[in-house]
Amino acid sequence: MNEPNERAMQESLKRYLQKAGDSPERAEAYIHFYQLAARNGIVPFRYARLAEEYTDDYFADTGVAQADKAWYYERGIPTFKTGWYGLTKENYNDYISDFDFYSPKNYSKNSLLIKWFDYKLTTYYVLSAFRDAMPRHYFFIENGAMIPMDAGLQRYGTADDVLSILQKEPIVLKSCVGGHGKGFFKIEAADGGYLINSEKTDENGVKALLASLDHYLLTAFGIPHKVFRDACGAQSFAVLRTVSVFDKTDGPQITAIMLRLGTAATGLVSDYDGCIYCGVDLETGRLFRPLLRSGDAEGIIRRKDAKFHPDTGADLEALTLPRLQELKDLVKRVCAHLAMTPYLVMDIIPTDTGFQILEINSHGQVRNLEPFFPFRKNKYNLRAFETRDW
Image 1 (cartoon, rainbow, N blue to C red):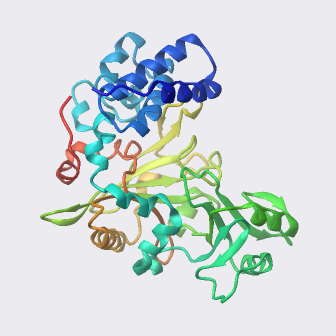
Image 2: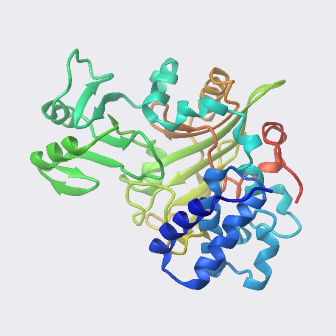
């Protein structure tokens, strides 16, 4: 049993209450869940995450009575998963407990090599052998200075260089740290001016944004495959998430593939309200069980069946991921290339000509994948992670 650091707990409580609303009831619940995380031995830097998620879950209507929620929390399960996964008291051990997912034993699998994936510039060079399977990386931006990567330049870039690129294709600016679309900018030329995240601007607006950035990558924008543009709208995103395990005996294995699709409500970034998640059959590539996400305002995830896309009416379950075998070959080759980090979660754009790897997580969340692929029902996941029946 671990004892949490009192000062760290109070500081994280203060940050949470500033965001969620200061009330004695929330404060009491937060402290209880922070201590629950420590008591169950998860890595200390995840105490606050678990406390925040479980506090939000406790005060949200998840379909489980508050009096019954403790049974789930004591097993490392926020109760929104009962609706999101279809999790019950009979099948809950098919899914990984937060106490196991955040266990130091499972983080230690990748140890110091996690640094390869925490900073997107490093990831790019770690994957240098797969440059053809990534969007073109033009510049690394540091304090507004544009350092050339794959820009075809022997000097630092200028804003005029970027404007020239924009006459040929849209670009993306993304922070080297963080995820979930934070710090994401899409820029494109339109009607004699420019759009930044779909908002009109001019040349000066683009230059001002570039000058303001630090530790950013400037890359080409990956345009989703026509199958998904037709089904979801020309401006919608389509991003695959894959889970792979390098097994000591059987080598690289793919244990899950999910596709995130955009709607008019989501804008440009995924993993928020309005996003649609679909399982991808590992043998046929057929999409199955599309789910529309909501619940962000409550700090939980809710679902609604979304067989038909809400904007276009397209039957999503009639779609098949093009070039499935090519995707599987790519994921397995990357998995083998990085065998010393045996559990990888990758975000990949399916395009008309192939696939573009956006980023890799060495301890990526599976909560958006488990409605389709329960983690503990796969033998390779069980070999990669130490888990228990709760």
